[in-house]
Image (tube, rainbow, N blue to C red; front, side, top):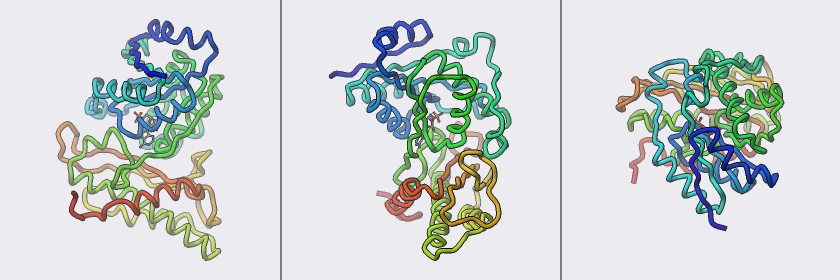
Length: 327
Ligand code: AMP
């Protein structure tokens, strides 16, 4: 089966493209993105393509989820390259990829404003450090789900809290869609792939390497406790990771151990097989053009999730040592 890419810039074009698929009651998978597509996004689209013959990928830099105007202005935009990636996946996987590229006016006919709020799970992590961020995410995902009406929504575990917020949103708003969480894709240096990584200069990139290393130290700590059959203090897990993040040029935004479903801090003595999310946000100093001097990166590991722990350990084991000559 040969694949094809269809670009739709508004809801009418999207409805016309999807009408036969909806009419035949065939599955539609949806991958929302802000563009500047990288191989993490690509993995999501490929995953979606194994589950549906039609994959809608939205490319929309959502203004209402940015709490700083300079951050929104600096966000990378690479539409032509993005469309080339999607055409390639369509061809490679023999599916129809629909690139939905709406304007701000099309998404927000009454002007860009966040009108939805998902309570409880937005009190900590990015919810605390980026006020209003998840209201913007909830509002745009709600609008996009209403436009696309997918059967499957594929999102990345790198943005774990976002996944939890969207799961709540789907419930709150009665969207009839299955949510599929895809594992975090890491680069050769184990840094989680992110559109924001393009804003880092080489020194900033080297600093970013501390992030997966810190998460890996936490994994080692709980694994050691498991092997020894002991408990482990929540504070000790966080302190172990924090030590690996102490570097000139890195400013910690947050580093928290939380319950992965409720997104509330875990404290005190924990069983070593506890299901816990260690989540981090860091401002990385960079001199690269177009950035405001720092780039904010997030990452996480789900402790107690054997697959997530192992993926991180494998990525770290395969990464060149920091400071080693690059080929
Ligand atoms: P963004 O364009 O950053 O809003 O991300 C769009 C989707 O891609 C979200 O569901 C993200 O969680 C997901 N994503 C971004 N980076 C990665 C990554 N490194 N691995 C897996 N999924 C990712």
